[in-house]
Amino acid sequence: MKLSTKLLAATAMVSASAASAVELEVTHWWTSGGEAAAVSKFADAWNATGNTWVDGAIAGSGGTARPIIISRIIGGDPMGATQMNHGRQAEELIEAGLLLDLSDVAEAGGWADLVNPSSLLESCTLDGKIYCVPVNIHSAQWIWLSHSAYENAGLSVPTDWYEFAASAGDLQAAGTLPLAMGQQGWQQNIAFGAITLAVAGLDAWKGVNVDKNADVARGAEYTAAFEAVAAARAFAVGSNVQDWNLATNMVITGSAGAQIMGDWAQGEFAVAEQVEGEDYSCLPGLGLNDVLDTGGDAFYFPVNDDPEITAAQKEMAALLISPEAQVSFNLAKGSLPVRGDIDMSTANGCMQKGLEILASGGILPSSDISFSQDTTLQIEDLMAQFWSSDMSAADAQASYANLIENAD
Image (cartoon, rainbow, N blue to C red; front, side, top):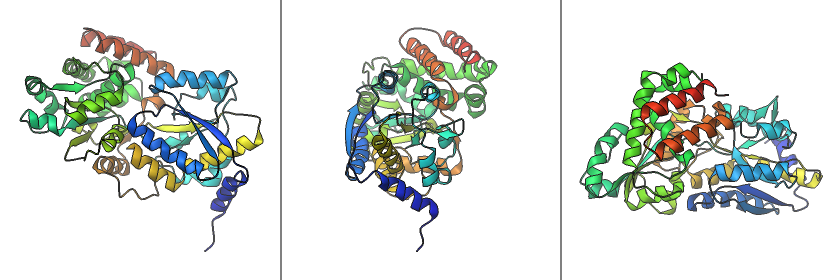
């Protein structure tokens, strides 16, 4: 059997640095139980090459970790590799010449032929050069429902957002919090985005999030969406946890009926040994539309002047997108793989739903791709203010439309 030229080149590149073991510090913000189980798959695969993964986990969300990561790179204390989201978060670092060009690794590995959807690789590309390796697809438009919470209240488990909203009063009467919500702007923004997509509809959502049309953001579809978000705010009164995984645990334990959170919540259900369809349900698109965004995680490699470290960085980049690493990591993480050529038949029901949507083409760009980091942070700040106050839906919509009008 003859190996292809690309495969031979990729193998040579990966093997080139294997002769001498290298320690690489890897920073990331995967610290919950499910996330830690997932990132250990990457660490084990790297250590198996004879190199050493020095774990640089940063507690908290990406909003906490990114400034630390960026400050270290700019300040001359770079790590060997770092997680960030693929999209526009690293633009300024790339423009400053601080991140390693991975174009040769991508060419040798045939990334252009295997990354699906292709927009993931495009979001790692600037001026024709590839600066990151995408490792998963994460989507944010999911609602997670506790079967025990609904059984205790004598209710059927909802099949969409409107059924959930109708059940909220009965859940409260049974002493159960309808909606678990962590008190952080990025989590509240996820809920906002998922609800607006479900309630305002796909065309209006694209008008705002793709075309940045402020008139659509001021329109009737978004008025209905903001009123639904205001209802969700009322459903979450009493949810005093901070971290997203603590909110997920409220669903796992049945103290809350539901949580709106990205598909990474699956890792927490897995660690708790809960079974999809028996202990919990997952509804992509809040059960109203079979579309998901294609956000996710990627690894970037800061530039350094040591050829041995550079070679190891490229070896790691090739490893992270290898079939074996993609399967083991994403099964643990609850995310979808970036490769379109691997077997995910052992994935659970929630992941299978996501894979079916991905195969059908029902995908949307994530906010990390559509909006600059500055615009995203402004929207998150607005959501944090809205969810923690009595701001009216109309006032929130007006402020949001102004942000969209000036979005970049």
